[in-house]
Amino acid sequence: MASPLYSVVLGLAIVSAIVAPTSSTSRGTLLHHGQKRPRPGFRVVLEQVDSGMNLTKYELIKRAIKRGERRMRSINAMLQSSSGIETPVYAGSGEYLMNVAIGTPASSFSAIMDTGSDLIWTQCSGQPTPIFNPQDSSSFSTLPCDSQYCQDLPSETCNNNECQYTYRYGGGSTTQGYMATETFTFETSSVPNIAFGCGEDNQGFGQGNGDGLIGMGWGPLSLPSQLGVGQFSYCMTSSGSSSPSTLALGSAASGVPEGSTSTTLIHSPSNPTYYYITLQGITVGGDNLGIPPSTFQLQDDGTGGTIIDSGTTLTYLPQDAYNAVAQAFTDQINLPTVDESSSGLSTCFQKPSDGSTVQVPEISMQFDGGVLKLGEKNVLISPAEGVICLAMKSSSQQEISIFGNIQQQETQVLYDLQNLAVSFVPTQCGAS
View 1 (cartoon, rainbow, N blue to C red):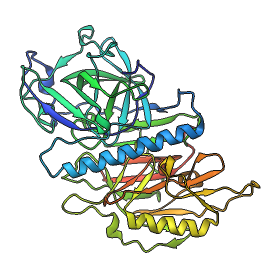
View 2 (cartoon, rainbow, N blue to C red):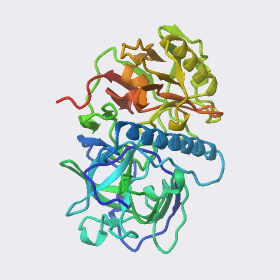
View 3 (cartoon, one colour):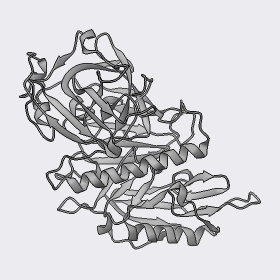
């Protein structure tokens, strides 16, 4: 595990749970979903996961693409397992970190901030340098088997008189431990009785991957669900920017101007963690590509659909939809193509050697609540000197679409969980 940082990353996770009664008469037994807790509002700074590493801009983008590819595969694996009896596997990687502290007195740690998973956890033991020692905190309390949060784990059994959990992530990373409640501090806002996993055996989380995870998904164990907030938002700066990104929850998540582009949020009973949005089509250079809206729709059996995700780098589309976008973009940009498959990208071009300006075709995402026009930095990335590539890929044989974080950068993205909508407001993120 990495040593504590001043940040937390956004990303995805998998859960199996082993649950048992605890010897503590924990106040965790009082934490049922029907009860009211104060609904706080706070804002925290996000930091890109590799920002502290001595890497070139090309190395940074290649690492982000590889993480995003693994994440996309993990999401697909999770969706495929949702209809079976196997333990789900969550993505568990992310692109942004945020500052968090736990306990009384508070201990800081770095965690993945993940819109694709629900469990909150940090390492308590099992590593050379535990992030959090429960014995040092006066506000720590274990959760018994009959607590609602234990029952919210995907699979529950009682073992050794503890409410235990196991989360398995893509790439073989795992965290195992027991469930408890603690006071969490976000910047200067402290929130008591947050249910979390106290990790005793955490494998595969190396330097830069955080010392835990903050689940921001739609399930009952996630931070927004536990806080009972009706909305949260983030504003992510462009790749390589020195300006900070931000996350806001509750009352700190400001509203959006009237007439802003929005899309309906769809809750999937088969995959309740993910945020599905209503994408209806794509235009390139003003040309409607004629992709049937059904290509992006969530089906009754839980397949298909379009997930908005903060931790997946690129946007992924079903094969036919991607082919249509890539072909139209290639036809209009009027540059020679180059092979950059080694970077994990499929549609790439050689920039003019004379430095002349490239006329980049505008790509627009057609949602049920308006059209989101993507800026040049939301469309193109550069993995090597003199090369630019479309920041989209095919999800291969899968029917899933993922609206990735490059397309969301320099945009305030507001999740309105009460009115079931996501709104997009182009802005300069990180500006004071």
